Length: 249
Length: 302
Image (cartoon, rainbow over all chains, first blue to last red; front, side, top):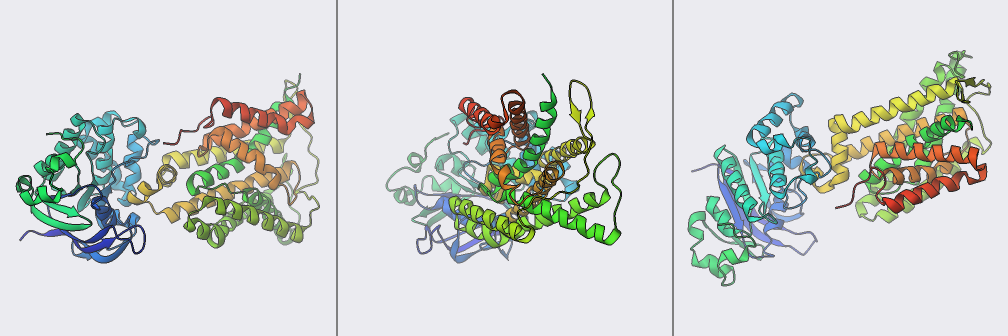
């Protein structure tokens, strides 16, 4: 039995009291896995992982990280607990240099550890090293995503949580981002990912959940889900690919 | 033509600039215009004055540090006043601003700061009366330094102090983790929390810096001009003008904006006439905003 890193149980969450967007969703992420959360628009995918990351108020259920209850911990504590979140948009500080974006995230590390960690990120993402003095707002979409991911990884998270990393990127960058995530998993990082681009996400994922109306409705092996008739049905009769915007494959 | 306006302008600019740093930081990090900032200046100055009196009561009369008009008691009192003003700002945030901020309407916080401004000013008038007072009644002889410029030792010392403080704040903002956290919070509050920044802590640092610098600006005014309960309120407009001119959120911008306004005012007094003093600085403000609405060092909102 593989070790459960993230255990989300019967979660209900929403921005306004009494109006839950996430309605009893349960997902688990095992160590070393890439788990993908799919679902039609408005299914509450983003709200689900934002609630997990402490950004959307939780009204019921619990979130365990490595067995420890982190339900509704304040967002700025999450990264200290080992959960690093990469938002879909505005996920870098645009006026700060690439290097300062990385440095500001090192606040939760031991002070002496920070320079070495930044160098490790530069080794993993040579593009960022070349652009270290560039303001993050001037990076290309793909590089910005790379910086956001590096910034999240720098703190040795137990789980990396990403909200639609391919959104708004040109097809060339979409495949680059998924290759990057695949490589990150190989280095031993556990990943939870929400995606519209079902085909590309399932191609790199281990397991996937389909979220409909705030509830997990289906779970399966990522590679098999693509041809699963239930999934097509849940996407209102569409192939999952058509629900996604940029189909990279 | 005399270049005396350069010294006068730099001095006025220093006073405005030290205040404008607080205004611009409060605006960009706490997202509201703090109209009580001028009153932090006045309170800091009176606190410093009270500390000077307390020291001279304890140690008797202390000779000034030649050639300055003040001795070590004022320097110690200034440190006391800075700490006091920082605490005042923190206290005001705790009892007033933070509660209103959590309700999320910026305009209410701005109005509350108006109210706080009036209350603070009235308390000063009530306690110290509205009669002007001074740190020292000694008259300093200005030394000629060429080009028709005359400057007193106090003025030189205060210009140097301003330069050191501005450099210090700039290094804090750009070279330390605290400064990067402040920049991060001003650029994207949600992401700042995600990367692990404790917002409450950054807010505290912002008030401490703003309050302490407001006190220094007030004491400068007290040394070079006079101490009055209205001294800070009268600086409010130039401080906001400087912060806007320099680009909201930018510390170097606020200081540069303040120097431009200070020099323009002093130049106007000398070249056109004292009655044009305020007009000229605002004409410059409008002209700059006409060409560059985001201010000199400002950045377009995304």
